[in-house]
Image 1: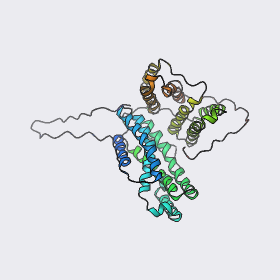
Image 2 (image 1 turned 135 degrees about the horizontal axis):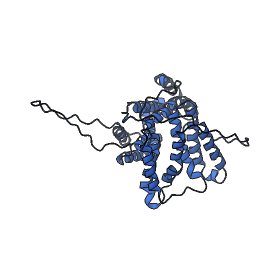
Image 3 (image 1 turned 45 degrees about the vertical axis):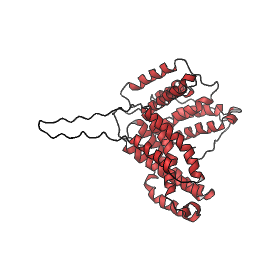
Image 4 (image 1 turned 30 degrees about the vertical axis):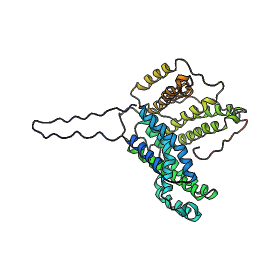
Length: 360
């Protein structure tokens, strides 16, 4: 999906009709949101440690989203915006809180109760078709992934605030509100050219297979040297399974592909970067353009690969691009075909549980 560089408007005038200025092209909501967050990042005057941590994470994430938009990779810019805005939106909520709410447990819990009413409509069960009308498919996937986070972050915030500090609990209330605002932003985006929705289906077979690969690879020394990477990959996989169980197919597919991308570098031997990688990506680009199907979820990962190749290709280090071409996009295309037959379960030998905080 590419944004036009220029929008031209023409006014057809009848003889003698007064000359009227052509209407200004509509503002780009993606560019406007990036600019708004950039202004907040540069002008927010908080001096506390929490803001310093948020700013340290958000600044490079926002810059990468802006760079993707400048490079005309709009799907990647939207995806990166999702990560960049979460902490900034939570910080904006925190900035509106009185000092006593950030330090006093009783006042924190009163605010938690108040926000329970504000967020009540967004914390209920989500019907599988709640976002079926959203287009394109990537926007639907991002909305389906964000909506359940309102409930998860809100409910977790109370125990987190009680076990740490009221300010930390408020941060997660703000994160719940940020998820709600993000869904509203996604709903307001223009849908763009209409294409057939991708044939989404349950992914239980694929999720089981990928989890089996992860558990087989989770052995010392790899599990020790790359523990954080395993946690990140398994977290995306667990979220994909939860979304799939709720019938939120677009979000489940997105998280499944993210899990595959995060896990692939942990395989041995390490993924190789083929000499014809650029040609392989062009072939995948052509394939995703055909058939009149909305392939924006797959095209997101193609844009990930294109950005990685542009940045690291000259040094022969475009590993993520190679993973997308060899593993992630083939998984995407396979997920749009009929459900494969599940292999017979192997006898259980050991259970491994990776403990995580929600969505980390």
